[in-house]
Amino acid sequence: MLSTKDFVLSRLISCNGYISGQSLSEDLGISRAAINAAVKTLRSEGYDISSTTNLGYKLNNHPDQISRGELLAYLPDDRMNDVIVLTEVDSTNKYLKGIAYDGAPTGTVVIADHQTAGRGRLGRSFHSPSGCGIYLSYLMRPSISPELVSRITCWAAVAVANAISSVCGVTPSIKWVNDPQINGKKISGILTEMSIESETGSISSVVIGIGINVNEDPSEFPEDIRDTASSIRHETGKNEPILRSLLASKLIEELDTMCSRFPAAHDEYLASYRKLCSTVGLEVSVVSAHNHESEIPRLGKAIAVNDDFSLKVRMSDGHEEDLRSGEVSVRRI
Ligand code: BTN
Image (cartoon, rainbow, N blue to C red):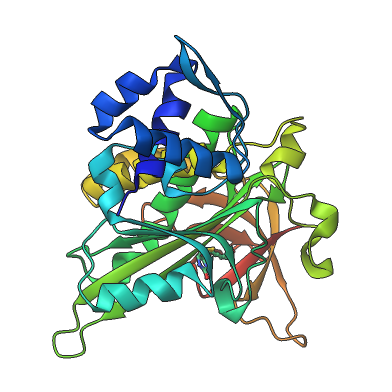
């Protein structure tokens, strides 16, 4: 449920100047006293709001927060009906899978300021600190065969790249299969989880989990990812924090577009993916996804992304292999 405070904040952000108490009260259909109370609460949360006679209210600062009011400034009111905003959760994917089981509709979004047990691919964890990243899960219920679900992850990588490109002015590349990168550093991770109806073998839900490192200082990352991961702010050298709510709203829009066009717009998303994929043309080392220490990597050169998003690699002995996500992991050498 959206509160008066959410509506007031969203209007203060989107008007980008002064807005009178009278017009807020008329627009929202609530009393001036309720507007005053909402402004007071927002001030206590760190929003610097001035009030000037004859002009009204003005938002002077914009703390980077993930909240319903912030998202409402950029998304239509009715879109927010299916957006769940949490301060803390163990994992947005886990939470969304739970409510998907109870019947949540396609397009339901769960977003959190931080996760206490963020999940990554292959049973890894995903570093999800408070106040600097985006941790978002999106629900789809596509009528497709389960083998095609891995394609959704590639479409989602395109959606992430598009959102970052339009909000941050930098277009990430995609390391096959679905790691958005800036300057060769991973700035986002995508984990797609599917539930199948056991009686029919058909898909009951697909949860696309997206984590984006937005404003982190990479020196605070856990040691094992410090050399390979970074944040958008760090890689773009921006002085001010990037507004996570603005980027998250753009991402939700991109995911809505993706969801409405899946799978018909295959050719278009494949073409975008090919343009963004930075792995093709590189010498790579191939290991099985669950890479055991004793495994000797096989060397080759990535030569194309196939129509099904698999990666064609010419191995060092000259034969070609089509690698599928989940089976292998590819590293640049
Ligand atoms: C990876 O690169 O290993 C995938 C990381 C996916 C992380 C996101 S954050 C939001 C969603 N909730 C989770 O627990 N994981 C995904």
